[in-house]
Structure formats: structure tokens, C-alpha cells
Length: 273
Image 1: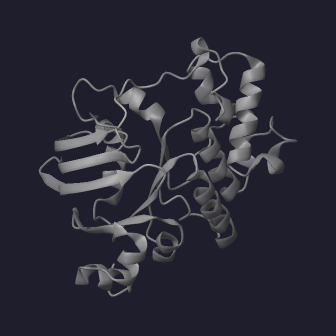
Image 2: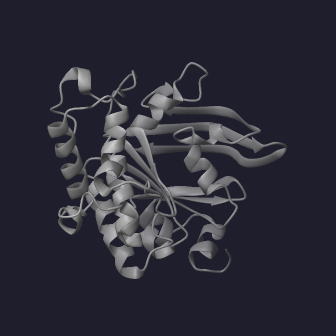
């Protein structure tokens, strides 16, 4: 990965956390409840997310999918009047504990949003931004990080001759892959994706899906999607949310072919939502 050969003083700060005995459990969510003011958005969420898997979160609008995703890197903390109860263990440490550092957490758990949001800077500076704010100044090292991140995001060949051009001049699909490259540049363990293809055309969507499946070799991915076909194509596990609750959570093939709850069957088959 991009920063592994960098000297210790230049490495992105990592979180002190105990490693799991078995390299499988990434997030262990226990009895998670969340309220916006007096409105409860998440109700008794219990599920375990595995490492190097693609986990899809599906469900109708307003069911708590994006809210849940934002708890996994504590971006939900930035929303006023939010309260939570319960626990989320990230690599066996309770990341909801008051002593846990959310800024460090976000260097390990990156996020890609629904709409591409490149900075109004050059393509190069978009990718180099994260490493720079983490103290990497060496131009040669930054060049290596930028190239590797863009290659890993399947974008290098398309932009290598215009790295100084504005990122805002890229197509929508290219901008989204640039945002993924920007996330990869700080070497996260996890990539959260909130409907990353909803604003893209079918060709760009196919490229992003191919990229996500390739990234699974090195990263754990949690993706919120409204697209049932997409969840079925790319995910290993799927959680079905409804009215702030997890109705069903299982391997994707079982969920789509032999769901245990009639509501899951009805949603997947388009009877509501």
C-alpha cells in the first residue's frame, strides 16, 4: 500500500487498538440506538461486519442506512442533537467510548459520499491532500502515493498527463474514482460508501463496481445502496434495514434467494420501498 515504505516519522498516524485474535471481525455492533432530538433513528442494532468483505446496507429511504454508516467513523458526531446508546467495537476497542479519538478513527475508516466531492484543486493535489496534512512533505514520496492511489482507483491511465488540471474538469465517474483515490491515499483499513454510484451513468457505475470488487483484496468495504441488483452483484453480506431496525442480516446469496423474513422478500422483489 502507498505508505508502507515511508519512514516512521512520515507515516500516517495509526490508532492504538488491540488486534482481534482471529483476523475476521472488523465491527461488532451491540445494542446500538440513536436519536435525533426525540426521534429514534436506529433501534437495537446488532450485527458483525467482517474484514475484507463487501457488506451492503439496503432498505427504503429514511430507514437509517446512512445514519448507521456515519456511526462507523463517528461522522454522526458532527450532527447536532444526536445521542446514542450501545457499543461499536472496532478491532475489539469500543469506538463509542469517550476516550476514543474520532479524528484518528477517520484516518482508518474512510468515506466516499453519494455525490462526487473533489476539492477545487488539481487532480494531484486532491490525492496528495491527506498525506500532506499528516506530515508527508517529501515530493518523491507524494508522487509515489498519488500514482499508486490513482492506479488503485483505476484512474491513472486517464489522468496521468493532466495531473495539474482542475479535478472539477473530470467527468462524474472520474470524479468519484478520484474521491476513492483520495481516500486510499491515507491507507485506511475500511472504506464506507454512501450510494457511490447513484449519480452516475451505467458505464461509470460498472467501473465503480469493478473497482469495489478489486479493492476488497486490501480493504473492508461497507456500502449503502438502493440498487438491489448492485447489492446482489458485488456484496458478500447484506443487511436489510427497515424503520431503523435490522430486519435481516446474512450472506448475500441467502438474503436474495432464501430470505428468512417475508419483509425482506417483499422489499428485494420490489413490493415496497
